[in-house]
Image 1 (cartoon, one colour):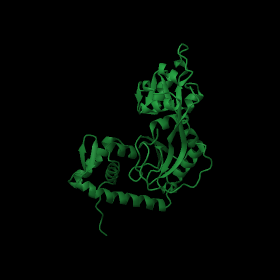
Image 2: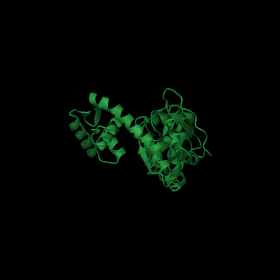
Image 3: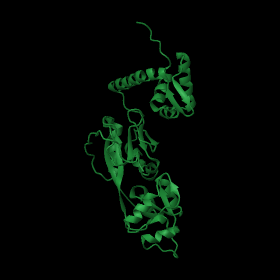
Image 4: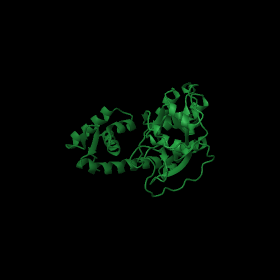
Amino acid sequence: MAIRRLPSLKALRAFEAAARHGSFSRAAAELSVTHAAVSHQIRALEEELGAGLFHRTGRAVELTERGERLYPVLAAAFDQIAEGWSQAGAKDTAALTVSVEPSFAARWLVLRLGKFNRANPEIELRLLPSSELVDFSREDVDIGVRYGLGGWPDVVSEKLFEATVYPVCSPALLDPKKPIRKPEDLKSYPLLHEETMEHWQQWLEAAGVKHPRWALRGPLFIEASLALQAAAGGQGVALANDTLAMADLAEGRLIRLFDIEMPDEEGYWLVYPKDGLKKPKVQAFRNWIREEAGLGPPEAPKPPEMLTPRGRGKAVR
């Protein structure tokens, strides 16, 4: 039998990860090496091949014609190796990678992860904070939490929480000379906005305030956690929901100003590939987070629907 002539498997693995992610940095994170190590391995592969595999333009990388030919072959080969290893009885010891938006991760998930780790000490958990939708077919992610209307294509979606919003602030912000007895009284205080100025205007109108144009002022934050942190620091009044503000409300850093709340048609969803529960680690995380969300024993998941994506396109808010 002829001896196979193969390049470095480590270099091939670096190339496959970089091509799948479209990023040397994300490939490095997956492989637990440095960006420089991935770049060096791919450069060595290109030198041995005698041709470039990536077009490098700033931070972005795109496959060359040679790279386009090599990638699908390698991806299929690594998939077959993984499947063969699994069929041989190997335990799934890889990390469980969970994609979550930073605000949800910081204000809800990480506060409870100790319970998951104690119940599942054999699972190495890795959080991937990201506000972008994950492509499970291309990225090394097992399960995620998204914010939106649900119904994303090619994934199973299970609703974790409804969302309603209401005003919160630090007790230290309140000025006895400017009491807040009705929604109109908020005009005397800075309003903190998340993503858009329209949320405050919508809440005030739902609370019966007519033409609240004065709500279109105040600092704008990209993430909900930053707006809530600013509110807890006494910088103004923010709109919050129970999921993200629960800990601050319980410990007195924030107080709720009114019983009036505005339903949010979007919510928090657990999402994973249609065959994701074949992995025991994914099933364990799914069962645990459903219990933490107060949903009781896990139900049989519904198959994914082939629908047009809806919602804001974020993992979670």
